[in-house]
Length: 364
Image (cartoon, rainbow, N blue to C red; front, side):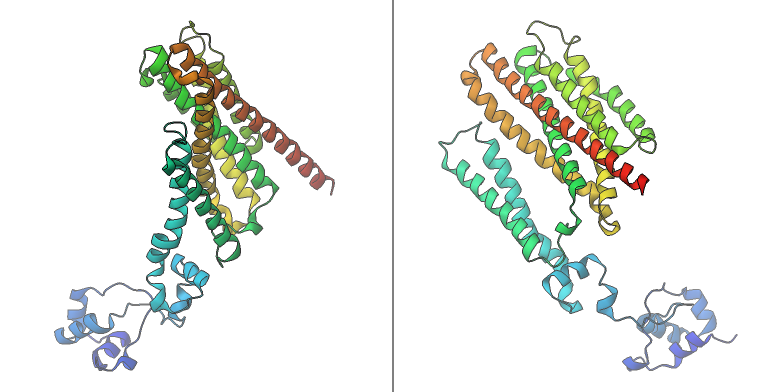
């Protein structure tokens, strides 16, 4: 049996001469029984250990550094002005563990730890103010680096437009409202209702499942902007029912319907915001839609709870009695209603803006 040209070349090439070894882009290790059949055992071992050439592959003529240009390491390397592939190998870990983690996590923890503890500990503790200031400084440093120094920023400013601004604003107000609602519904259940939070949130299961399936069916038939409006309405109605509940009313009159309705807002706002974001940016940035929206969701919940907690502690007179606690909880829930109303107004403005834009395109 005669060997193929590739195997012959590998068999007769000198393993100590690098110039005679063909470097190929991709390939799998040839099967050992096949090698034993077409070449001597010592030659097949040399080929496996030295050249490992695949079949039906063309030699790679592209430089090593250009092959990884479009990869994550390449993008990060370009942002630092590093083109040497040997130096790029550590960048994916070094970047995330130093600059990115230091600024992003520092800003996040400073905001979380500093602002939220203001109504749990108070300004009398020096570390609260220090952490809050550090969080703001780190957040400012992050934007400064991204805007003025990063050659490949996470999301360039050129990708932002009015549509994205509306999406971020609507998402922030709606999810801040939802975060406040979840927290203070639980507080009412534990402090005043005498029930567990699990018992009060059981209606989330059928309502969430139904609304999630319905949104999946409607997204291709109804504009995402109108689905965003539905989500804002659900946030506002659910919060109103929770904030306006009389003291001696049963769970089934207000809170039950509040849980059913506000779950629709959660299931509609996120997918609609992701779709609007993806449609509003160039194609190369469309994959960032879900990550940017999720970041806005997390920050809005955190900041919304911070403001709601500040409102609660300033109006509940110390929260020593049940009436004082209820008054503080209601104040926070009415703040959630205000956020949802603002989000509804912004979503309606966005719908009107989108309709006028589509009308002008139709006239052309």
